[in-house]
Amino acid sequence: MTADVAIPLRVTRTRAPILRLLRAELRFMIRRPRTMAALGLAAAVPIIAAIGISVASAAPQGPPGQQAIAGLSAIVADNGLLLPVFVLLLCMTMLLPLMGTMWSADAISGEAAAGGLRNLLLAPVGRVRLLAVKAFGIAVLTFIAVTIMAVVAVIAGMAILGGDHMLTVSGSTLPFGQSIGRIALLTVLVVIQVWGVAAVALAVSTFTDHPLVVISVTLGGVIIFSVLTAISTLAWLHPVLITTGWPALADVARDPMPTDAITDGILRTGCYILIGYSVALGRMVVRDG
Image (cartoon, rainbow, N blue to C red; front, side, top):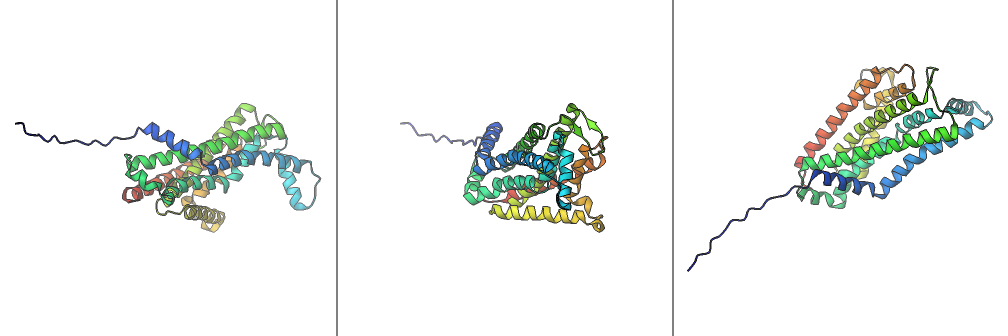
């Protein structure tokens, strides 16, 4: 007679490969209809701006307000490589922060509202890895959107407005190679600034299950910061406002290019990124669904 021997079963919890998680997250985020709409808008804005500037430069002068617009159009006309600078700086005031905030809101609040976040927290994925994957998807989509806007602006500027050089704000002219280098630098700087806004939005997203709350709070903060930045009597407060460094992005169109304000803006945004992701991580560790 033999006795049955109970053999203890050891259950091992497997971890999903990080590369597979990153690919899955990117594929999931890009396939969303609102993501495709946002990327399409990023491509359409430079074309619309180029057509509008071309029409305005050809129109006869009218009232003083229209003359100011015509003067701006005259600067960009036959100077198509300045169009990416104009478009990126214009969209940095609201459109690009809106895109970064929207993707951050979808990453956590959107998942929680749809009931998918609880399943993700129960899956064999650590919460730190989960937040890193979400942050990676937001960063990549932001980079894609800004790059699309810059590339389309270069093509539209040269095709519609003409010119293969950049007339700087200082009055000098940069050749094609240096102009493309300045545009690439501005693209990277804008991406970093949007990352800062997205990091704050991601932190807010971990505290609520409503994406619209994230968008309202973050963009409301951006608007308030912009107003405070414009008030000279609050100069003591400007060093801590993320929007303080945004006007300095226009320095890429100067010759020679000053770098002090740009460097300060990068460091300031880096602090916002660090604080935003730290708060988001602290919240994700204790979140139960």
